[in-house]
Image (cartoon, rainbow, N blue to C red):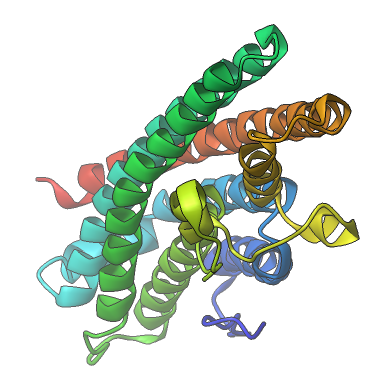
Length: 299
């Protein structure tokens, strides 16, 4: 996957060079992480991207402490590119908080479903109710996810729209770096939200599984193909099979399918917890960056 941002090699004064090198290195790592995550949408690679973003923002905060950086921001605080940076910081912070809530709620639903499947005693109505509650929660979450993806798309459209005319070399480098940081942050957050929603599929399953069909990235059977799916997709596939098996009298097959679903729910729970850790790290970094910007730009 070709990235939408580019790491630049720029000759800078010594006092800026070490900081921009650190940012360039983190951007390079995230470029690889983004490409890897986009190919699989698995929790571990997206988690690595989130922690990578945390390290990137740590370098950005060091850059913002430099007098030269602060002077450039103050001198150009009325220009659109500075407004982009400030506006982007608060929008990303809000989105980070919303996504944390979505993951927390999803983990709760996953645990509820695990508990219900463990307690199940051959009561089909109980399983229907449990799966139905999970589907309903996913449907509600997807509405928030779509809002988040639309917000990211708007941010992406505005990013870089204002010209960087009249800036000296250092100021232009600063503006471009901050834009690149925002760009890669948007990319990783888009991957995260896409993971949570498992969006992108157009499965044609019918009957009572229409909601999950829309949420799945692709229709998969209980074969080796499911091993290629991410944690959310794997759970969707297992629950779909359980839903279809609900009217069957083959108790042995159903028991095996419940065991598979439980294992995949456990894997999803572990994945969500890892993503929560990455988001918590990201949330703290975004707050610090926001505070640093406000301290610089507020008289």
